[in-house]
Length: 204
Length: 161
Image (cartoon, one colour):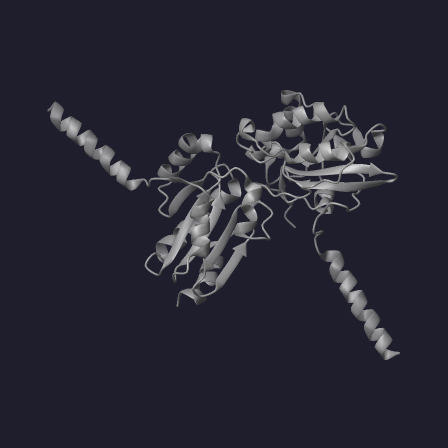
């Protein structure tokens, strides 16, 4: 009996420890959480609202980061190309405005207007989704596909292989993944890394 | 008189050019050579960019370390990830304005995914990060966060003696 109690306490200790560890981040094949957040137009947006979507290109990004800014036009082009094929862009700003004032909700509204963003630009004020998805930098992309009631992660990583110069890109990681998904293939490169800005986490 | 002024101006320009360092543009093998270097030198390699606020904030601490341990086989290398097009407009002016004394290089290697893991497998890609490495002493520590002079000093002290 004592042994069983000891065993249970070890398991319980392990589980509680686990609960405090940050999520290691989604990988291809993982089930992703449904997202519901406030959009720049002030309305709540939920992924479930996109009745015709086959999936989503979720991008953690922000206003201030030069890596994010460098990709804005490419993200717009990508949305225009792939929302028609069932994969709209969902941009999410997870940064704490107390650390980076430019990344406030007002800043997002202004940026979306200035660049005429054709996609939803959501505010992850509590940073819940950035933590849940395991986003570590901006921009950080997660391509998701609807499968019945679930959202399955197909790709995690960078947009392409040249942040600085769109004309010098040789590998379009996200587009390649989407093309493979759309033609029913398995994504061949489902994980990449890129240099980016740190996510501005709230000070505990 | 005119000649004197010309001489004076040239002298000033010359001193200026001596004081601000020449920032080299490098490819990844430059970093790889340091990562594989077997000499008993402790390298403190910091990845940063001029527009990255947390990076710029910790530069004085790295400079302080470089100055204090320059005679002790400690070498601080500031690897800038500024965009190549901002080399002359942002990086060079920043380095000369702040009179950075640690070696600064611009890493012109845009396919980040091809080399991030070679620096450290645990690195997600966000900056700043700092790698302290001494292969001769088989020492390696990767800071995936902002650092302070005190933390760096505590890290290098046991390996430089």
